[in-house]
Image (cartoon, rainbow, N blue to C red):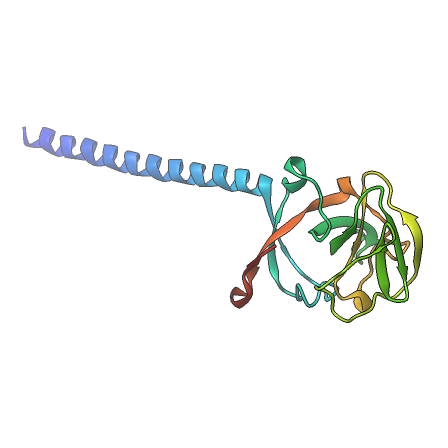
Length: 189
């Protein structure tokens, strides 16, 4: 009789251990599924350069909405990350972060340090510095493209340069919607 009681305790103990392990496995599986779903909609990214100052700084940690343009339209002023044709030292394509300035089928002109869209002066309060260097004359932005520039126009390789040019919308990885770090500068866009 004594032996059966001990076996019964072992069986109960094993059942308890098994249910604990199953609970952990279930919790981990749920966490993995949630992470996969979240990563379908959100992409974390880190700013590496200075072309978006004063809005964004090097080492700012951002979240991009990967689905923003599946459910809505691109708007002037959106901050986007896109795959360019520029190559990194390792041969991979470089990702750029810029602000959408011109939309499909609009005509953009840059002269005397000012940006004009369809002949009207564009007011840009977010710029670092007062002028936009370079000249662009009556460029019609192709359908399915945007014209994107950095806020730090004197230090930005962007759509003004033929190496970048107008950005095809299918190259856009996402729209920046949240700066999470530094914690003192948390901000939504």
